[in-house]
Image (tube, rainbow, N blue to C red; front, side, top):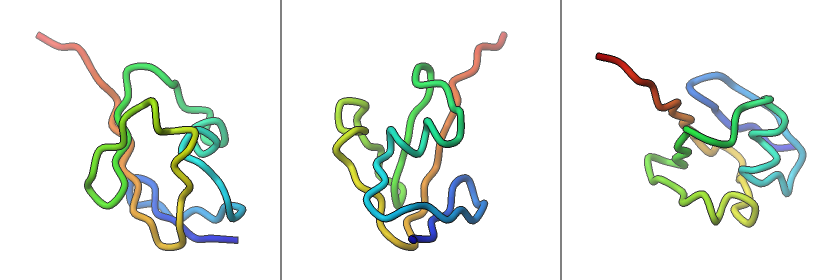
Length: 67
């Protein structure tokens, strides 16, 4: 198991978990969001191949519309 932080909340996951699997685990939408690890944006085409590590700090940002 690894421990990561997602939007400042602690979460334990299986080793080898990718960003895409994290989003599925969180039941998060796959569109209209950005994902950063240690404050570095990860391009969407790398979500499936980017494996999370212990103590990673993940930020998931939901795009919003306003006016």
